Amino acid sequence: MRVRQSIPELFSTFLRFESDQVTSWIRDSRLHRSIQQHLAQTPEETADRFWVMYWHRAWIKDETRQALATGHISAYLQEACYWSVQKVVPKTQSIQFQLADLFQVAIASVPKILKACDPDERASLKTYASSAFGNVVRDWLRQKREIDLCSHWGLLLKLSRKRVIEVLQGLTPQTIEQYLTAWKCFELCYVPAKTLGMRQSNAPSAEVWSAIATQYTKATGETVSPATLERWLTDCANRAREQSFPSVGSLNAPKIGQDEGELQDDVTDSRNSLLAELIEQEEQQERLDQRSRLNQVLETAIAEFDTSVQQLLQLYYQQQLTQQQIAKQLEVQQYTVSRKLSKARETLLLKLVRWSQAINPETDPEVIKSMGLVLEEWLQKHYS
Image 1 (spheres, rainbow, N blue to C red):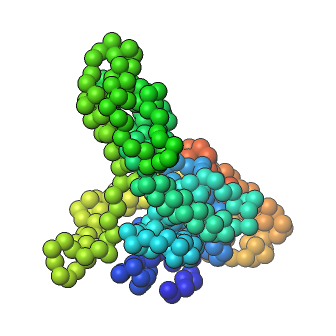
Image 2: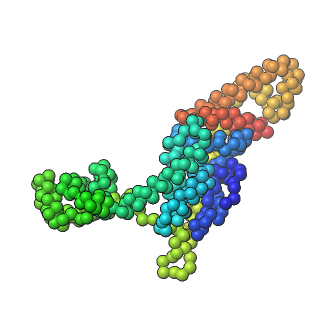
Image 3: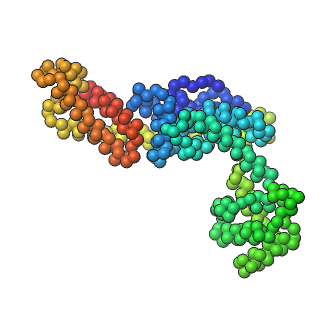
């Protein structure tokens, strides 16, 4: 695996797996544009820790940018996730899931990691995530094995009322109520054999089904046959099993009925779709609109300055004179020029911050810090 070096690579590229082996890095164009734009605003920030903290705060404070922040952090944590999962794989003794499959299980937990970790209080997000990824995969495999080992009846005994209601979502309210009542009656009447334990519990006997049916009639006043109750509870168990662990097929698995090729060969690249093109057009238009509004805000603010300040800005940014040269030309002290320039910049920066906060009331302090660089760049372009 090639080691990534630059900030754009660290925050916009993802591992590519082929035959359960890492073959290359794939760049996400949207994430790459995003990190490049932010680097242009703060070129002096070249440490990955700064950008990790920046995107972590963005994820916490700005819901509109959570998806973007998750993408950047997921890219950054690719190596940490890979090495954590690789340590777990030799211990799984499972041929059902390959390293690439478990990698996807682990990297999908990034939002939970971001919520649980505070990079200001810990050594680094990467260190915390390395431990968390391994725990996520081990816990996932443990629960998967537990679900596989349980019979339907053992699984139903493990479910809580809240979990039963969750797995029944999508059914009609009447059906949910019937299933839930049947499950309650099952809990009251069924006692697994001690020799088997809860996992491998056998199906209830005819006598137990009869008792469950009697209990259901007492609870609802309706008569339901034992066969119907068994069908309802079996459906409930199947739903719990499927929702807890949907069937996963590896993309590296061979194509069904073919001697050559893998399933991933048929996966299309959505980036080339019409939808992707429309999204790109919307993003470009949004950037143009924001740039236009930014120009209007700052140009209006400059027009409100008195003539002497406007002249000072022209001499400094347009003619590129030094403060000493300006002081000599205007026949004033150099500190007067410095004070007026600083005051003008502060006024413009305040206008810029207020405009930004009008768009996003919870503007991050690091973003405000970068606005000074944005303003300086804008003034140079404006007067040139």
